[in-house]
Length: 348
Image (cartoon, rainbow, N blue to C red; front, side, top):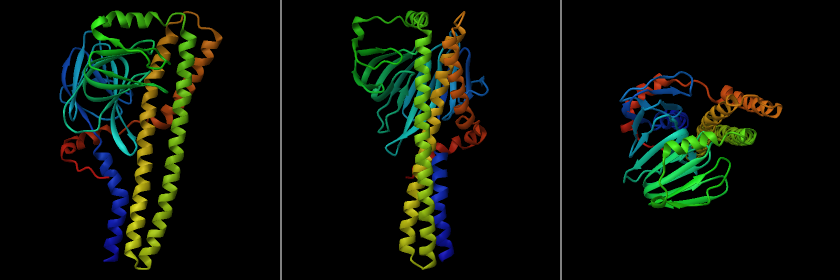
């Protein structure tokens, strides 16, 4: 009896987090026109097809005149031409959030009525939390963002400030700036092609400034990753202590105490797992920043020494993140388990 009880306790600690991992959300491509490709962690680009499931770490990009539509649990995402977009997720206050990163281009999201955790959309500049809404967001070549609300409410957050937009409102935020001003959509006709053109032209003369901001963002990402690494290390250490106490309690026949230590160990295991997911989330965000830095650098005819030094530092930091946190995932395994997602039981 005690042996079987021990097996059950171990299962709660080691199998349950694995079940949670297998239940990670996926979105599906349900419409494509033109040149649409996908990649896992940006390693190898392949032709996308209708019905393809996309998992955290998968990226989608559309070519000129190309579009795609993604369907999730209770939302649709319409991806415009010349857009680069990544599926991700993170944990906040112990709750998993679907997160979508728009590196460049424009998307439109429609959220349904189901009672699900609100998804978020991130650009190089802001983080959007949506609630029963329909909105468009664009990310420009210079890292600027434009958000326009058709229905519902969107919280637009920068690093320090938050701006709440409602139906018929919009905002534009420059790279490295905070969301502060609203505009009424009815008074501002948005020519998206012109907006992207202006965002590309605005880079000229600001290359060193923009690259410096990108470098600062890389420093911030790496600092946050290290914080989560420490959190994970501490949680795993505390988990081991509880496991040892559990074993001691089992040896004494104190199954009630063993059960409590098992619960505490499982909590620490969950914290460690959440830290890993958040580290991956931060690592994925660095891909778009690095792409932006390369695009800016390639557009400079004769880069100065200062610009070369900044770009060298960016490349070094991105190389560190890529080597340690952007490892190629086992996508085939995720594809095989995609069919089980709908019947997945939410545990913890």
